[in-house]
Length: 428
Image (cartoon, rainbow, N blue to C red; front, top):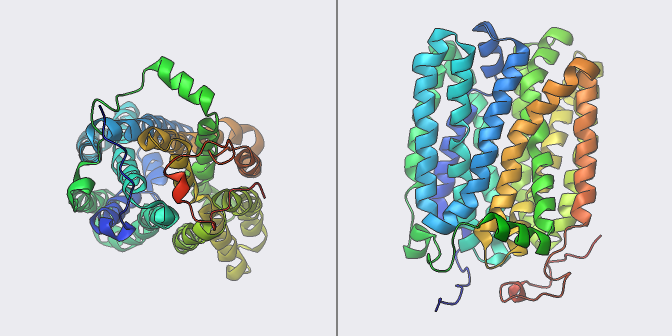
């Protein structure tokens, strides 16, 4: 006999150590974003091979992201978070101590690729903990705070730390500065307050790792799980793609400076940080799905076009237009924040599994973005790649329209009965 499911009753602010730990960890993870691609090229890799390195890293992240939710159900969130720290730290030491000094492309591919398993376990382990423990009326806020810390670190404050560290320690030394931030953040994230928060695992006789046949049955019964996965993959794909080719486009093609590129990237994520909080809280009052459709899908499609067109025409003449296009892109990306609140509502009794679908989509975005560059750039150039991203954003908005929550299916659950009237899931 199993115990009845406990109604989540915690506040997002009960998880302050997780938010701070995530912030520091992602700062460390994001320090390299603005200069890693050129750094690897200077160490003998081609731009094409660098795209492959990022793609392999993304594949590892996708696998890890998928496992994060179901592993939290089985073993508890704290153990999953700890595993993420280990799988980031050990490969990074090998990357810096062996692969980079040897100038071996395949060693770099292997060590950096394995490191891709690390951050999703920590980050999405924390996210799974939040959506399971925080009361549903504050789930949008909890998700907004999570993505605030995530994007504040990767790459916003990460690039700021890089800009301060690079003149002092150089590129290689800055990797070690990032390493220290990761250790500090990981340590904080393991400090869990309260008995429920510390365990985070359901009884083992209640939840087991899903067998393939069971997984297929769950998907057939709730195909919206696949839609949330696809939408989440599209959400961050452009973000992970532009760091592969946009530095070269800005500097080599448009003749803009490296400093302008770094500020452009910082502007995207600074805007996204603020708007993550805003749209997370607003979506609790208005509509999770509507926010994703119009701000995220349609808005990001338009912003993606401007991200290419504005620098090409106003990059040298109008800083306001240049950085304004970056800020608008960051704003529209924040429209996807309610996905983290919406996903666990699809499987109220197995939130970890529902989050695995969402997290798998997030992990897929890490390789999907660079893969689009790898496949399309040789044939259609930078403008064509940005057009592909824009089309995918619009497609994601259309897919959200077809996501069916239990209310739409007249399947009323205990948790959903706690939804206030301000939660509007009507298709609009």
